[in-house]
Length: 371
Image: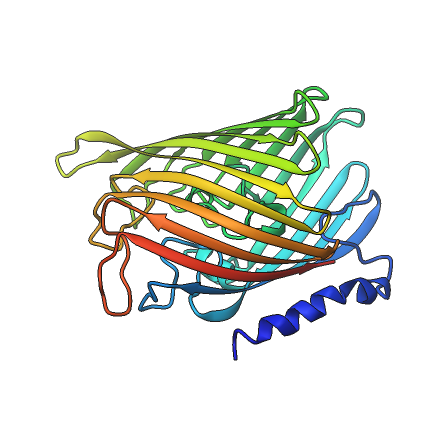
């Protein structure tokens, strides 16, 4: 019965153009923003995922987004309120769904439903310098929780193991028509509630040398000691991603990052561990409504800094490949079918019979609606 719901939802999606035409003009799609306007947006991302290893706890292992096995679920639902004038903007977007449940599990009640809540001021009237405070999306890696913005429906491991959100202060500096600079002072690595009273710093350069190229470089520095990780000290992290759009039909994005974590052992000796990843994704548009996308990635966390191996914390190292079919019948909805395969030289996966496995295969169907 769960699977049969999707054909019905697809019929609803295809009809959204007619339904949307009846909406008031004051309600616009979520990613639009007009000066001196108050706007309300709605975003709903529903999915059904089947993990062929059939995990015992019904959770697709190592994933935060769309991580429920054999269950028709809402990954992320947002009600997005925005307000902007020439020198002030604000946004509050409460979020719900399995993504919020999994990714905000460490946040206290009252904070674990904040997808974004921020406000900002333009510092100088004729310059693009802004100061924002609150909870906002992280610039690290090339994928956000909003699936419609990405080539494939499921997220790469690179995005699942860096901050999706940050809490603190964000400064925006438009250095030129091609170069933007951002500086963040935040509570920590994906923390709304500060875990250790230390603050972390992020810098971001966003460079667009030509219309078809975008290069983004981020650096993170912060103390990651907490009750769960009392041996952790400073974390150093950097990532670079490149977006290439040579034509309307073909797009490419490639991401590399590496992180270093200082730790203190039982003898008070300092040592440094690292983790790193590389991935590339491409998307080809068959026509305005149909496209296909593919991704290949390698993720290595041999000392389990950010990934806990289900098999007794042994080294985590995996190659993942993905293929996704995208159908967008109108500008307010999308249907996707995503296949994902994992392969490792070590045992990383188990199934309902607690059988060890070095591979895993998942199929995920998705319908996303926004207006």
